[in-house]
Amino acid sequence: GQQLNQSPQSMFIQEGEDVSMNCTSSSIFNTWLWYKQDPGEGPVLLIALYKAGELTSNGRLTAQFGITRKDSFLNISASIPSDVGIYFCAGGSGNTPLVFGKGTRLSVIA
Amino acid sequence: DTEVTQTPKHLVMGMTNKKSLKCEQHMGHRAMYWYKQKAKKPPELMFVYSYEKLSINESVPSRFSPECPNSSLLNLHLHALQPEDSALYLCASSRSGRGNTEAFFGQGTRLTVV
Image (cartoon, rainbow over all chains, first blue to last red; front, side):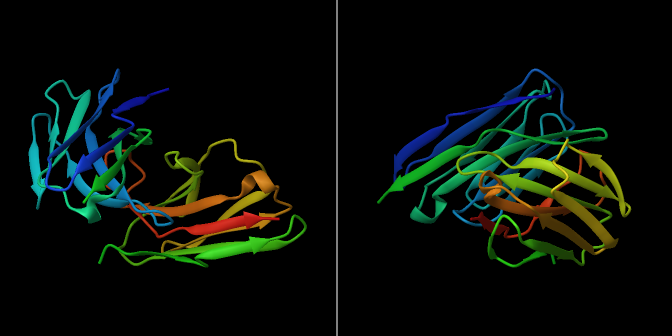
């Protein structure tokens, strides 16, 4: 089945630093989604990407849909303590359900 | 409004109990999902309902029984669960059951089986 490789698995950064994480796949996706999950809560949709090459921002977050349609990255600029959580990428295509990456656990040191 | 509401938020049940998890959305979405999530893992798909019909069952044990009474509601009936079934159960919805649409998640039900 389709699988996503999400990296890094975890990262510790200083408040104010920029963060970058990415997902890659051996399969093509038509949609890339990025979610953030806080402990004990459901994932919250941050950004949705629908076109190869698309670059979309949501506040301090920027995500891109790779040209090959096999990868996507998420950048967070000037991180703050509330950015702490687990970030999941998800790829979608056709009639198959979303495929999730294994998550990037972000810790921010004040 | 992108809200998916799940009840209860927490549930503790014995292995002989019968309980139900409930999920509701009013976004006019025609696909609804149940996911199971263990600690430090991504959500794992259990069931997909598309236009109120079960379209995907990911080989889930029969002690989990989904039900979709109408396009806004999704239930998960639980019976004779095992301690290893303890997890965060997430409901989600999307415009359609196709993989290339955004899915919105509820806040989850934290289930503990004792």
